[in-house]
Length: 232
Ligand SMILES: [Zn+2]
Image (spheres, rainbow, N blue to C red):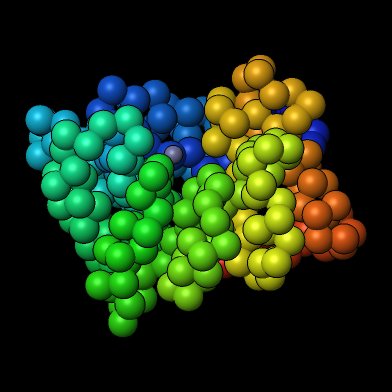
Protein backbone atom coordinates (compact mmCIF):
# COMPACT_ATOMS: atom_id res chain seq x y z
CA UNK A 1 0.00 0.00 0.00
CA UNK A 2 2.85 2.39 0.88
CA UNK A 3 4.64 1.46 -2.35
CA UNK A 4 1.53 2.38 -4.30
CA UNK A 5 1.34 5.69 -2.42
CA UNK A 6 4.95 6.47 -3.40
CA UNK A 7 4.23 5.63 -7.00
CA UNK A 8 1.25 7.99 -6.90
CA UNK A 9 3.58 10.84 -5.90
CA UNK A 10 2.83 10.88 -2.16
CA UNK A 11 5.99 11.67 -0.21
CA UNK A 12 4.61 12.33 3.26
CA UNK A 13 1.70 10.77 5.15
CA UNK A 14 0.24 12.23 8.32
CA UNK A 15 -1.15 9.66 10.73
CA UNK A 16 -3.80 10.72 13.23
CA UNK A 17 -3.82 9.39 16.78
CA UNK A 18 -7.05 7.89 18.16
CA UNK A 19 -6.45 6.72 21.75
CA UNK A 20 -4.14 4.53 23.86
CA UNK A 21 -5.39 1.36 22.14
CA UNK A 22 -3.62 2.45 18.92
CA UNK A 23 -0.77 4.75 20.04
CA UNK A 24 1.78 1.91 20.06
CA UNK A 25 1.03 0.71 16.52
CA UNK A 26 0.88 4.32 15.34
CA UNK A 27 4.38 5.02 16.66
CA UNK A 28 5.68 1.71 15.32
CA UNK A 29 4.50 2.65 11.84
CA UNK A 30 6.36 5.94 12.08
CA UNK A 31 9.51 4.12 13.20
CA UNK A 32 9.27 1.61 10.36
CA UNK A 33 8.42 4.22 7.71
CA UNK A 34 9.89 7.62 8.63
CA UNK A 35 8.04 9.40 5.82
CA UNK A 36 4.88 8.67 7.84
CA UNK A 37 4.52 11.35 10.52
CA UNK A 38 2.53 10.73 13.68
CA UNK A 39 0.14 13.11 15.37
CA UNK A 40 -0.75 12.72 19.03
CA UNK A 41 -4.03 13.36 20.80
CA UNK A 42 -7.31 11.80 21.89
CA UNK A 43 -10.11 11.44 19.34
CA UNK A 44 -13.51 12.83 20.44
CA UNK A 45 -15.10 9.39 20.00
CA UNK A 46 -12.62 8.10 22.61
CA UNK A 47 -13.68 10.68 25.18
CA UNK A 48 -15.56 8.44 27.61
CA UNK A 49 -15.61 7.83 31.37
CA UNK A 50 -11.82 7.36 31.42
CA UNK A 51 -11.05 10.46 29.35
CA UNK A 52 -8.75 11.97 31.95
CA UNK A 53 -6.63 8.86 31.86
CA UNK A 54 -6.50 9.01 28.06
CA UNK A 55 -5.52 12.68 28.12
CA UNK A 56 -2.77 11.95 30.64
CA UNK A 57 -1.31 9.24 28.38
CA UNK A 58 -1.28 11.52 25.32
CA UNK A 59 0.14 14.39 27.36
CA UNK A 60 2.93 12.12 28.57
CA UNK A 61 3.91 11.44 24.95
CA UNK A 62 3.96 15.19 24.27
CA UNK A 63 6.32 15.65 27.21
CA UNK A 64 8.69 13.06 25.76
CA UNK A 65 8.92 14.23 22.15
CA UNK A 66 7.36 16.33 19.40
CA UNK A 67 4.66 15.34 16.92
CA UNK A 68 3.55 16.87 13.65
CA UNK A 69 0.15 17.95 15.06
CA UNK A 70 -2.33 17.50 17.90
CA UNK A 71 -4.98 15.29 16.38
CA UNK A 72 -7.50 14.08 15.82
CA UNK A 73 -9.27 16.22 18.35
CA UNK A 74 -12.65 17.94 18.29
CA UNK A 75 -16.30 17.13 18.78
CA UNK A 76 -18.46 14.26 17.55
CA UNK A 77 -22.17 14.70 18.20
CA UNK A 78 -23.16 12.06 15.66
CA UNK A 79 -22.32 8.82 17.45
CA UNK A 80 -22.91 9.76 21.06
CA UNK A 81 -23.58 12.97 22.99
CA UNK A 82 -23.29 11.37 26.45
CA UNK A 83 -19.89 12.95 27.02
CA UNK A 84 -20.49 16.25 25.26
CA UNK A 85 -19.27 18.31 28.21
CA UNK A 86 -16.14 16.15 28.50
CA UNK A 87 -15.54 16.37 24.72
CA UNK A 88 -15.57 20.16 24.98
CA UNK A 89 -13.19 20.08 27.94
CA UNK A 90 -10.80 17.67 26.19
CA UNK A 91 -10.90 19.77 23.01
CA UNK A 92 -9.84 22.90 24.91
CA UNK A 93 -7.15 21.09 26.88
CA UNK A 94 -5.61 19.71 23.68
CA UNK A 95 -5.80 23.08 21.91
CA UNK A 96 -3.62 24.37 24.75
CA UNK A 97 -1.04 21.66 24.00
CA UNK A 98 -0.91 22.78 20.37
CA UNK A 99 -0.39 26.39 21.42
CA UNK A 100 2.35 25.43 23.87
CA UNK A 101 4.15 23.34 21.22
CA UNK A 102 3.37 25.64 18.27
CA UNK A 103 1.93 22.82 16.16
CA UNK A 104 -1.35 22.65 14.23
CA UNK A 105 -4.51 20.87 15.32
CA UNK A 106 -6.34 18.36 13.13
CA UNK A 107 -10.02 18.65 13.90
CA UNK A 108 -12.59 15.89 13.72
CA UNK A 109 -16.08 17.38 13.65
CA UNK A 110 -19.24 15.43 13.02
CA UNK A 111 -22.59 17.20 13.37
CA UNK A 112 -20.58 19.71 15.36
CA UNK A 113 -18.76 21.95 12.90
CA UNK A 114 -20.25 25.21 14.15
CA UNK A 115 -19.76 24.07 17.76
CA UNK A 116 -16.07 23.55 16.95
CA UNK A 117 -15.93 26.98 15.31
CA UNK A 118 -17.45 28.45 18.46
CA UNK A 119 -14.66 26.97 20.59
CA UNK A 120 -11.96 28.10 18.16
CA UNK A 121 -13.24 31.67 18.28
CA UNK A 122 -12.03 31.77 21.90
CA UNK A 123 -8.48 31.46 20.51
CA UNK A 124 -8.84 34.02 17.72
CA UNK A 125 -6.05 36.22 19.02
CA UNK A 126 -3.64 33.28 19.41
CA UNK A 127 -1.32 31.67 16.86
CA UNK A 128 -3.54 28.58 16.70
CA UNK A 129 -3.71 26.98 13.25
CA UNK A 130 -5.23 23.80 11.90
CA UNK A 131 -7.50 21.94 9.55
CA UNK A 132 -11.07 20.66 9.65
CA UNK A 133 -10.36 17.18 8.39
CA UNK A 134 -12.75 15.57 5.89
CA UNK A 135 -14.82 18.67 5.52
CA UNK A 136 -18.24 17.93 4.02
CA UNK A 137 -20.30 20.82 5.33
CA UNK A 138 -22.22 23.78 3.96
CA UNK A 139 -21.03 27.02 2.38
CA UNK A 140 -21.78 28.81 5.65
CA UNK A 141 -19.61 26.35 7.61
CA UNK A 142 -16.83 26.66 5.05
CA UNK A 143 -16.86 30.45 5.40
CA UNK A 144 -16.75 30.28 9.20
CA UNK A 145 -13.70 28.00 9.01
CA UNK A 146 -11.95 30.23 6.49
CA UNK A 147 -12.63 33.28 8.65
CA UNK A 148 -10.71 31.55 11.42
CA UNK A 149 -7.80 31.05 9.03
CA UNK A 150 -8.20 27.27 9.17
CA UNK A 151 -7.89 24.88 6.23
CA UNK A 152 -10.56 22.57 4.83
CA UNK A 153 -9.37 18.98 4.42
CA UNK A 154 -10.97 17.55 1.27
CA UNK A 155 -11.31 13.79 0.83
CA UNK A 156 -13.29 11.22 -1.13
CA UNK A 157 -16.66 12.80 -0.30
CA UNK A 158 -16.05 15.30 -3.10
CA UNK A 159 -16.34 12.42 -5.58
CA UNK A 160 -19.77 11.36 -4.26
CA UNK A 161 -22.52 12.63 -6.55
CA UNK A 162 -25.14 13.23 -3.87
CA UNK A 163 -22.90 14.81 -1.24
CA UNK A 164 -23.10 18.30 -2.78
CA UNK A 165 -19.56 19.10 -1.68
CA UNK A 166 -18.48 19.97 -5.20
CA UNK A 167 -20.84 22.94 -5.39
CA UNK A 168 -19.42 24.28 -2.10
CA UNK A 169 -15.76 23.77 -3.08
CA UNK A 170 -16.37 25.31 -6.51
CA UNK A 171 -16.65 28.68 -4.75
CA UNK A 172 -13.78 28.27 -2.29
CA UNK A 173 -10.32 29.59 -3.12
CA UNK A 174 -7.65 26.88 -3.45
CA UNK A 175 -5.63 28.74 -0.83
CA UNK A 176 -7.86 27.18 1.86
CA UNK A 177 -7.75 23.53 0.77
CA UNK A 178 -5.60 20.53 1.61
CA UNK A 179 -6.09 16.99 0.31
CA UNK A 180 -6.53 13.90 2.47
CA UNK A 181 -7.92 10.38 2.38
CA UNK A 182 -9.24 9.51 5.87
CA UNK A 183 -8.07 6.01 4.88
CA UNK A 184 -9.42 3.40 5.33
CA UNK A 185 -12.74 5.31 5.19
CA UNK A 186 -14.48 7.56 2.65
CA UNK A 187 -12.94 5.90 -0.40
CA UNK A 188 -13.21 8.02 -3.56
CA UNK A 189 -15.08 6.93 -6.67
CA UNK A 190 -14.42 4.61 -8.55
CA UNK A 191 -13.17 2.55 -5.56
CA UNK A 192 -16.04 3.51 -3.26
CA UNK A 193 -17.04 0.62 -0.99
CA UNK A 194 -13.50 -0.74 -0.83
CA UNK A 195 -10.72 0.12 1.60
CA UNK A 196 -9.31 3.61 1.08
CA UNK A 197 -5.57 4.27 0.76
CA UNK A 198 -3.16 7.15 0.21
CA UNK A 199 -2.50 6.35 -3.45
CA UNK A 200 -6.05 7.56 -4.19
CA UNK A 201 -5.16 11.18 -3.41
CA UNK A 202 -4.85 12.03 -7.14
CA UNK A 203 -8.50 10.99 -7.65
CA UNK A 204 -9.52 13.71 -5.18
CA UNK A 205 -7.22 16.24 -6.85
CA UNK A 206 -8.68 15.35 -10.26
CA UNK A 207 -12.22 15.90 -9.00
CA UNK A 208 -11.35 19.31 -7.54
CA UNK A 209 -9.65 20.24 -10.83
CA UNK A 210 -12.81 19.27 -12.69
CA UNK A 211 -15.13 21.15 -10.29
CA UNK A 212 -13.03 24.31 -10.37
CA UNK A 213 -12.06 24.11 -14.02
CA UNK A 214 -8.31 24.35 -13.42
CA UNK A 215 -5.35 22.15 -14.31
CA UNK A 216 -4.57 19.16 -12.12
CA UNK A 217 -0.99 20.41 -11.70
CA UNK A 218 -2.28 23.62 -10.15
CA UNK A 219 -4.36 21.68 -7.59
CA UNK A 220 -1.37 19.48 -6.75
CA UNK A 221 1.01 22.39 -6.39
CA UNK A 222 -1.21 24.66 -4.29
CA UNK A 223 -2.61 21.98 -1.95
CA UNK A 224 0.89 20.60 -1.38
CA UNK A 225 2.11 24.08 -0.54
CA UNK A 226 -0.85 24.56 1.82
CA UNK A 227 -0.06 21.27 3.58
CA UNK A 228 3.60 22.27 3.93
CA UNK A 229 2.51 25.56 5.41
CA UNK A 230 0.04 23.93 7.80
CA UNK A 231 2.41 21.19 9.01
CA UNK A 232 5.54 23.34 8.93
ZN1 LIG B 1 -12.06 12.01 11.81
